[in-house]
Length: 140
Image (cartoon, rainbow, N blue to C red):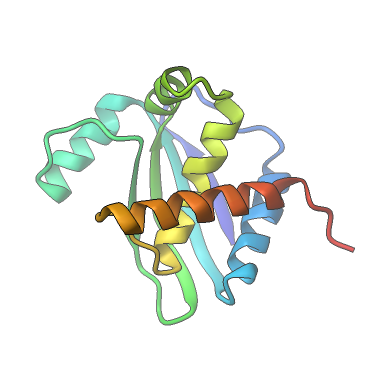
């Protein structure tokens, strides 16, 4: 089950399309969906989480707490919609595309992909783009 919550005024819209896409992403990595909750928030909300739980005093677009068990993916993914908007502008990307990148980024972490080294980050970006392409693929 995938849940979407908002701690700010952001509304995802067409949640079923996003749920279907994220479920396909998980299946494409040969994982199973347990329960994943996305919490949309603002920069200050996410900064507070970053400081309290990770001892980082920086703004970020996403923080994921992974509670997966083996191939069963579970966790909470916090996304700053303010940061997503700013990143989209900075990288000359549409907000919707940048949001998809961040949504799938958290799931890819749960699938075992890392992004701390340059090599891992490059692989993560490649996977993000591959999975964004699945967004418009209709299942028969």
